[in-house]
Length: 172
Image 1 (cartoon, helix red, strand yellow):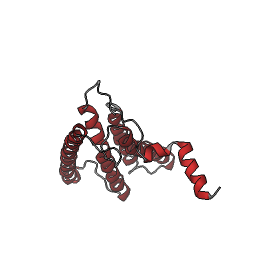
Image 2: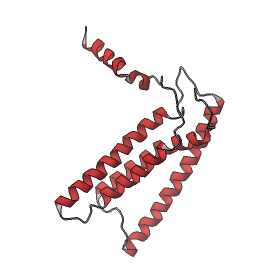
Image 3: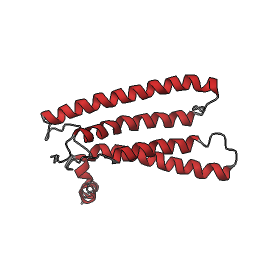
Image 4: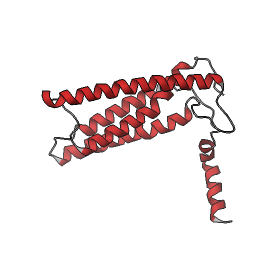
């Protein structure tokens, strides 16, 4: 057995093929994306709180805990997109009219929410320095903020599409 055959068998044995070929039955994820968004915010807050701490014994556990919560929620946001309502068409299973309409509404609503959040963030950043409020000052804070926006971009359409589905609707 060649290396490629062994790798192919490993993919099918672990079940990764179901993710790759979209063989997973979609689910309505109503509350889980909301908890993941809260975990993203909590993880970012924990990491950002370490900016002025000089004591390494206090800083490292907070930074590590925040990092684990934030990037764990980031990875979960990527997986929830796969397990939630169908938002991506495949050659074998194109989106029907209802799914396409829900995808369009969820995309538009999440785009509006993200645009308003970014606008609010820009206004906050311009005022925060003048008033002495906290604002990202380290490059890692800005990088984590970018990852948080990316996770929101992945997670919000799934959250909104889940709520747009009827409760008793069995997704196919």
